[in-house]
Length: 344
Image 1 (cartoon, rainbow, N blue to C red):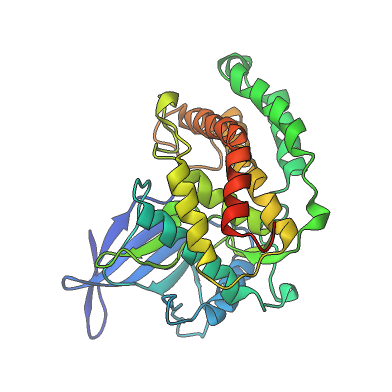
Image 2 (image 1 turned 90 degrees about the vertical axis):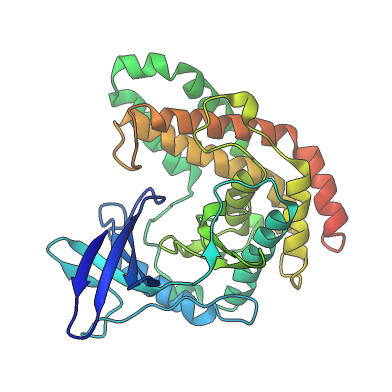
């Protein structure tokens, strides 16, 4: 833990290690946590001004009695971020008595995750799409990720092609399946684009969902992006880089709890959007797996890794969940029809 003394107050800093992209610190005064300080990874988020503009626009709308507000603090110059010799920094309010979960087996937690993801979208539904910058263009564009994957295959070490041959074969097969998704039937929304379970804050006291965090990827997208990203981490009770594939699950009760949480909000999804959700539960873990595989082939340039083959383990786990989600499409379709009868 580090320490900083201002003219009037002493602050302590504790490193938070959960994130894969940014460097994050919890700021304390004495024993009380007050703020979250982050160094933005500008190699990943190259348009820092655009990222912060998107976040500030969204936070202005993300205010409700059942959605906890996050505040960005301005610098002395009136900006929401500060450029220094050590990088780009921002400061946000800390939400007391909150917690996150990497995995869950609790139906209440799954319900609350579904409720808060849907509430996030309801609050942003009236936003002007033109006000938001595509800070990572084509972030979930399958054709772009396929091209990056093919480029990595062409330039990687031969030994990696051999080690990853099973994942490479699955990627090529599943790419053909996912190309059948009709994006033209879906409407653009302002999406979080990274709604994994540990990007949701929950109350330590009540277990209620509070809000979404890690807002760097807020930009235009389709609702099934956020749905699929949440499902891949809510209904799977294993770690994202789990090596024992028999531990990777598609927990049907957690799926049902999640969509019931969504449905506890006023309806806002079109018939086509609800129809797209089961394939979203396949698409999102697959595209994350494809990105992890590509990063492995490119010697781990994007994601932080704790050991050499961690990206390949992530890929293998994500692809296994994608395969299991494909098998669960009939179940997902039936449950969505039962919970959202007015749209299917």
